[in-house]
Length: 180
Image 1 (tube, helix red, strand yellow):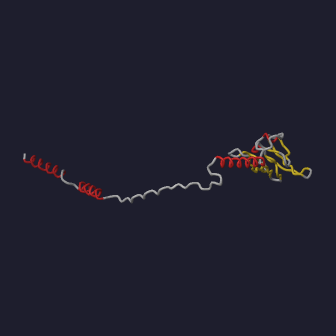
Image 2: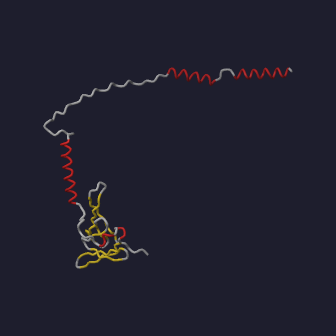
Image 3: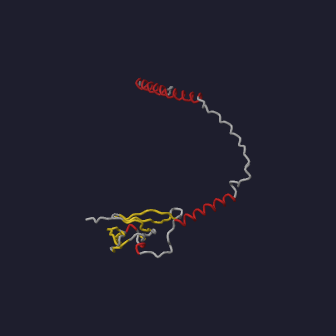
């Protein structure tokens, strides 16, 4: 019986020791104290400057935001586009040549010859051989032959850009060596 009392007292003392203050309580108290002492230091904002509007004093000129100024700018831009479009535009009224029905990537330059003191390129399309002279048209983009030499044919193509205006670009057909 004595052992049971002793064991009971030992167990009771352990339970009471567990309920005492611990180091965690000390840390929590320190954190609360530091949080209460910390005060943020925020600089005050400057007062906004007052906006004073200026009246438009140049009454002899056209007002920059008027409809008259806008219409003048639109007329000027449209006349420039019309003049540029006339300089670079495909010849839609002319009769198409045979090689304008094929894209350039389906054509193969297989050689060149001199015929009547003029260079002539030999172009193969769909297993047919065509003679191409300076000034002939090739491809789907209004490509006109501007130069023929032994290794390539140079074309001036006319295509539409992203905004629909006609622009020029240079394309070439390179001599293809037969692969074994």
